[in-house]
Length: 367
Ligand code: ADE
Image (cartoon, rainbow, N blue to C red):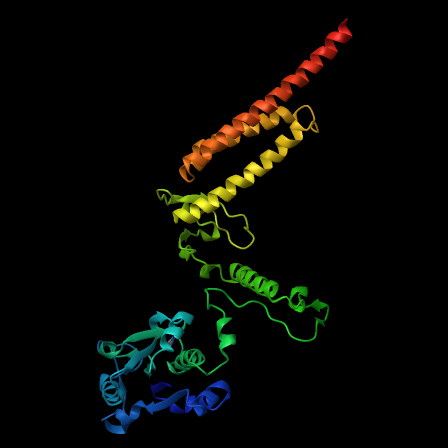
């Protein structure tokens, strides 16, 4: 159970929050507890005064140290995390919500009016803002925080609906649809009706990425992301940071699927993985080349094809020497170069014969 205690000058503001929907059920099910404490109860002044005018002059009233310190002394236990809601705090996000959902006890101080005595900062663990705008007090922000943290506490909501949350992977949520299949001419995407869950998962992932790129590209930052066994350096949004990174022995390639990511370059560092990828890439090029050679040797080509293929063999051979030799074994590449030499001779012979035939024809015509 996660226990919240909120220190506020306006306890009634929390009534609706505690008595509706998921939060109410979570409290009833003893998954969370929300205590509201009136800061005025800790005032030792006349009329339960809790604020005063600022030293040095200026407008507004400032929350005093004494009631806050006394309340914290009284309510704080060994494992209590003390949070102050203030627009000057660190901006709240899903990651912070996940972090806080693991706490046992959280004491939230709601600031009010124009501000609070600076010395109160010394007793808080964290200052949190819910965004770059100023509200009249910390009550609504504290409810925002408690709401998003509570739904992450085990057993409060269905596990499945949490793993698909927006931001759970730095991505917005994928689009969802319910009955009917067609509404005012707008159809539910066919894939969602297919029953093919592999396809549906793939579609959802791609849509989430697309949506995030369109609506919140700021969430997709250039990152170092751990990949299969080692690191790939992703370069998002065409911010070409990765271009400046040079790593010895790293294997570079430009990913094709640009509609999802604007990744300019990926660097692989794991030697075993590099070998696999480099070999695959070379084999693909060789397959295309062998197909072309086949056509020439089987006389199915036009006049230009022979010299084109000879150029292609040369090109792949230079690529093997200047590029693939960095990643693949010498023995394998030497054999390949040898084979390509042999094929080059065969194609060249074929070309010579063609020229011979042409010359022979010409000579005959001349006679
Ligand atoms: N108090 C007033 N505005 C606030 C904000 N944006 N976040 C947290 N606490 C606040």
